[in-house]
Image 1: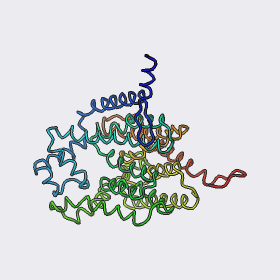
Image 2: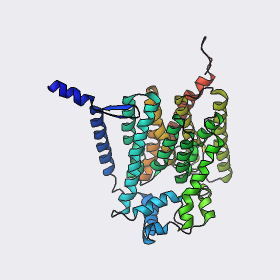
Image 3: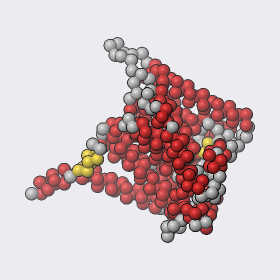
Image 4: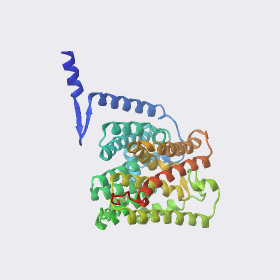
Length: 398
């Protein structure tokens, strides 16, 4: 009788999209989720500089203006969608520090769920999907970004991941819809844009699909426009952000960390042109050499662009590698031999986080930049070598 009952419990499954979770899997995932929440709970009371200088002031201004009634005010330098979230949070009987952080933490868990779904789509492996869920939830930069820093990089990265997942599923309208939402939250979504251009060149997207992106952004600013904020101001928020910083690097572990304190507009322009040229050249190579777009190649290309562009652009913050950190985990889970890649990317990012958050600098920023550069070279090698390697005898070129 006991054996039969054990068999029944073992056969209890949760099946969604082809992913079958056994009872033991569900128990493990619940435990992981609980411990991940506890890891964040211990950091919720930490007050970061960004919260003190920006987020709390924006929250208080919106609350004083009546919550949603204040979305027409010129507050901060973020786009309206995030301010809508802050406005809604003012109605909750919870302090701003906790409510802001809990929203970001919610998206941590959503990221983990869709990381698991993406890995399952790539590999068909239940074990790899569970591993992806676990690693994302306990990734140091994911934990620190929301629960300690009170930042919202998990929000726009979640929509980037949905865009990538939609590409794997050959759903072009959703690809552009979710990318448009990500872009409406953060300008850094453009690091992912070359992948959409690659899909366009390969016929997996059409121009009409891409038109959805500016439409989504315009729809996202309509409530603020109606509430009284100037349309020109709303349309040019990102232009203002682009000219906000002068130092070549704002604590990002990238190429310009070696000249971080330098303020030179000519060198900044060169850096922008270098990043654009490098991304365009990589895009050209993929278009010219990649004859068959496999899911693995698509993941490698996404990670390559997410690493390459912020590594070469000037005025980057340490948090701008957040999408690369996430995609590096997917990359390594899908290709276990490359587990060094997330160790390098997340390690470099975390090393850049710690001085700002806790005043601790375990390694120099330039050392972290070398680690990030090594990860970029590994991903580029994995992506490009098959395109240039001579085909084996009797094997067609891909």
